[in-house]
Amino acid sequence: MTLGLDKNRMLINGQLARSSSHEVFQSINPATEEIIGAVPNGTHEDLDRAIRAARVAFDRSRWSEDREFRIRCIRQLKSGLDKYRDTLRDLTVQDVGSPISMTRHAQLDDPIESLEWVAKLAEGYGWERDLGVARPLGISSRRVVIKEPVGVVGAITPWNVPHQVNLAKVGPALAAGNTVVLKSAPETPLCASALAQIANEETEIPAGVLNIVTSARPELGAQLVGDPRVDMVSFTGSTLTGQKVMANAAGTLKKIFLELGGKSACVILDDADIEMATMVAAFTVCTHAGQGCAITTRLIAPRLIFDEVVEATRQYMARLPAQDPTLESTICGPVISDRQRRRIEGYLDLARKDGAIFVLGGDRPARPETGFFVEPTLLVGIDPRSRVVQEEIFGPVLVAYAHDGDQDAIDLANSTPYGLSASVWSSDLDRAMTVARGIRSGTVSVNGGLWYSPDVPFGGYKASGLGREGGIEGFEEYLETKAIASPG
Ligand code: NAD
Picture: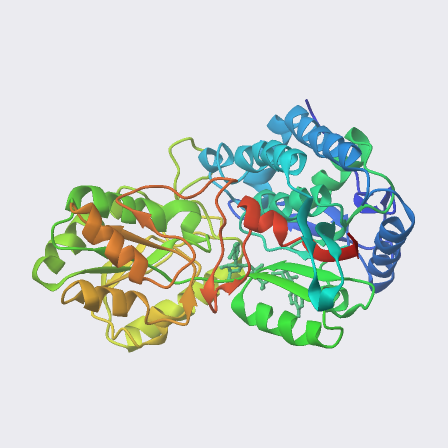
């Protein structure tokens, strides 16, 4: 079914709203550089109204107490998104530049399906735990532990997988009984405003419970974090912004949950299936032009077979060119913007200065002629301490370097500030599991096993974040714990 798009699609206090300044801003299709639509450019005043509405809805309505109603609303949201799935698929390809094949997984279909998982979790969740009677200080007391929503959640999201991140916050936060103000990424505003419209038109979610503010003003994120009426900030974005969020949240000492950047390692051991390992490594780094926080962007291979591994990876990467994301065969689409492409090119220049060897790529492809494309790039000959190896590039750039045995591989995998994800390849599962345990990251894939699923907690060690999204752990991020004792 087609979703009629208009320009009034922020959701504030139950109304589809214009910006108080009447301004709009545009979304640009990264594959064609064409303007594909416009949404309200939310102001400080708009965000203030959204926060006030969320506060009133939390403090003055029965939303936080009525679990059955909440779960019904989550299911209505899923049905509404289902109804407009085809429109959303086209919109996502255009707004995000996502390969259409990805919309059948992480970019659209999986996030929609995950709402049912969240609804079921909330239905069966143990909201109370009876600890029985004890006699602290000789006073006989019956103790019960109850789980309650945190309150008003400020959700701030990035552009690379907008539906995934928006729904991974909105779903569990609402199911847990919170009210939400979502400030979406300025680069992909149409995905967020479509969600606003569907939530408004297809669900009974009461006024103020879910507010969605689109804005090109970067200061709005900081305003949301610093506002004392907001009880918790659920943030996904870069580590640099995450640090600012953490510092800003200290002023009002609120709960923060941070999903940040990564520089994940693919570790190949000397007994691995090289064909399979390199095929997956190449596919992973090319997926969505490397714009995934958990994508493995460092290839750490045994010194004795290093050249063989690099050549096999090169061959697989060469079969995955950057191309039109509307083609079913596309794995590597454009990057989000010219700014992001220049940022990636800055790292490639740095690699050149550092004496890296470009085994593949390093430029803009000759075709397509328009769009923000970067060739899949494979680099060797770089010092593992260099910035290109240590910092998140967020493009289709894989850096390969050698290890001298399992412990060295673990040490190298752990040698960046990040700890989001990793993969390990070995024909000996016990050996692979030992290496997986040694890597300090929130998720590890062994021999191609996939952790990506709504019941799996996902998140980072070290500079990759605080807390977990998904799974029971992710749901519990949005809950407070209260202990009540009465004479027993
Ligand atoms: P970003 O940090 O630039 O922006 C993220 C969001 O924060 C945007 O909505 C932005 O407007 C807002 N923002 C900017 N300054 C702010 C401030 N001072 N206070 C509060 N909010 C502020 O990130 P991006 O470029 O949109 O996204 C790419 C990054 O996101 C990458 O680093 C990627 O690894 C990360 N990411 C992480 C995960 C994860 O689950 N760990 C998932 C997706 C993306």
